[in-house]
Each structure stands twice: as C-alpha cells, then as structure tokens.
Image (cartoon, rainbow, N blue to C red; front, side, top):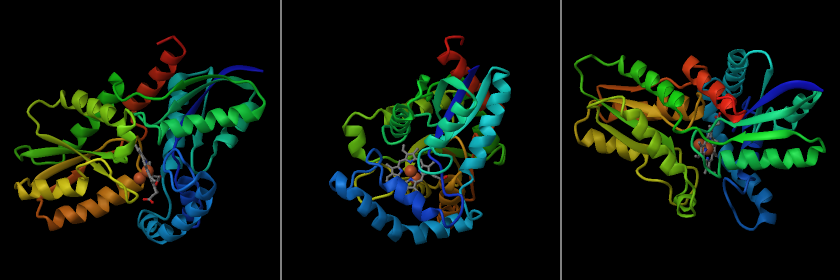
Length: 319
Ligand SMILES: C=CC1=C(C)c2cc3[nH]c(cc4nc(cc5[nH]c(cc1n2)c(C)c5CCC(=O)O)C(CCC(=O)O)=C4C)c(C)c3C=C
Ligand SMILES: [Fe+2]
Ligand SMILES: [Fe+2]
C-alpha cells in the first residue's frame, strides 16, 4: 500500500479525433443528469439518433480547431503542474465524464499505484448537477462497483475561491492589455448556458456564476460589464440573455471595443476556440465592432494551479 494521496481531476472530456465525435456525443446524450430525453429505457436509442444527426456539424467545428478537442492535453498539463506544486506525497490523475481517460481507467491507475486516499477535485468552478454532479455520481458508482475501498474526499466547487478570482482577474488584465489604452472597453462575461428548468429546480449554477462575476469585477473599478450565456444545445428554454443576443444589443448601443471573458471552463475547448474565436468573432466583425478579443483561458496558469493546490490542502484539513 502507498501512503500517497491521489488527486483525481474531474472534467467533461472531448473527442480526441473526428471519429470520436459521434461516440462522444452518444455518451453525453445518454447521461440523464445532463439531459432527459423520453423515458429512461428509450434514452440510449434516442441518444444515438441525436448524436448521429448532430455529429456532422460538430465534426466540422472540431475540424476547424485542429481535428480534436484539446481538453485532454490541457487537463493533463494541469495535472502535471498540480503534482509539481503539491510536491512529494501526491499523484494526480484525470477522469473524463464522456471520453478518455474514463473514471474506470483513472481509478484502475490509482489502484495500480496502491493508493487508497483520493481527493476528487471537480474542474467545474460552479456547481451544477449537469456537470460536477454528474461526474461525482459517476465516480461514486464506479467506486461502489470497484470492490476496493477508497478513502474519498470530494471538492465540488470553487467559484468564490480567492486564488480562482485572482487567476481570472490576471487573464482579464492580459485581455485588456490588447486594447488601446484610451479605448473605452466593455467586458462581456460569457458563461456556459444551462436549461432554465435546472435553476427552477434549485441548481445553484446561476448564483455561483453571478458571485464569480461580482468578486472578479470588484478588481476592475469603473469597467462596464455584462453577463450572457453561450452554447445552448437543445430546444428548451435556456438561461438568458444569450451571448449572440448580447453582442447584437451592445453593437446597437454603439459599443466598439469588447473583451469577452469565458466563464464555466478552466481550459480551452470547442466553446472558446470555435464558438468565441471563430463564430462570435465573425459576428462581431459584421456587427461593426472595432476590436473584439477574448481573455485567455486559465489552462495551466500558475495562479490557477496554486488555487487547485490550496483546494487540495484545504480538503485535507491542512489549508
Ligand atoms: C445536452 C445539454 C447540455 C448541457 C445542459 C450542457 C451544460 C454544460 N456543458 C458544459 C461544458 C462543456 N460542454 C461541452 C460540450 C458539449 N456540451 C453539450 C451539451 C450540453 N452541455 C454538447 C452536445 C457538447 C458537445 C459539443 C457540441 O455538440 O456542441 C464542452 C466541450 C468539450 C470539448 O470540446 O472539449 C464543455 C467543456 C458546462 C460548463 C455546462 C453547464 C454548466
Ligand atoms: Fe457546450
Ligand atoms: Fe456542454
């Protein structure tokens, strides 16, 4: 047995090739915690149909950002940086909810190293049952089925952690540096959308997002800011306003310089590299913005890694 602690980073995952897009979407649409389609026994079949119908368009988008999602490499880089920041005594692993490495593979790797103490750290800063909730339930199922006892501690949110806010503020400052010093820049926070029904049923996601925005914008006195929601994925009522509606609204009010700040994700993936950098950038150009920029994602930002390290130590009661 090893006396080390395993830190297991929980993330969504993304297709690692164009061929992986359809099976990745099948996994995602089969999960009743992110989307409920029809009665439970029919969902696997409907998931296949939706995945097949959607995959062409989604493959095209991944094709335009290098033929795959960078989420695995970026999450593994975060894991390596975290392991280094934590020092001896810790090993970091990654478990992806809808692609590889799966939760089963990650736990098998932890077991192979003889580690029984596991801190699962969800990489979604804002809690939602669609994201952190789903990953954590999957982890609990796999642990129960593994027949090995793990001493498991879970960190499922960090939307208001001082170092997370510091890391975001640093990236916003980097983004603002790209504008002429005298230009009047407005900031648009763009969070991943969620069906309104989740919020109505008590999901704290929206209040967590609003608190992150409040805490980070305190550091930017006098800056005008807005909050909108991107990446709807189905025909239900999603959080409003949408990011594209907001881009139109601001253009109609003569805003010319806009910094868009992605919330909800801690690394680059299709929603930053395609939706913002390609789709919204084209839209902004047509709408007459003079300068439209995105603040860089956190990825392996040293301040963000310090945040993760502090979360681990706090979870162990040494913070
Ligand atoms: C089916 C409904 C979906 C909900 C609800 C949802 C919420 C949600 N998602 C993220 C983060 C990510 N989503 C990503 C991709 C993605 N998400 C959905 C659907 C829902 N997401 C789909 C169908 C897809 C695949 C791409 C597409 O078809 O457009 C990813 C990217 C993975 C990658 O490319 O690396 C992330 C990350 C959050 C934070 C969230 C709610 C809070
Ligand atoms: Fe999405
Ligand atoms: Fe999503």
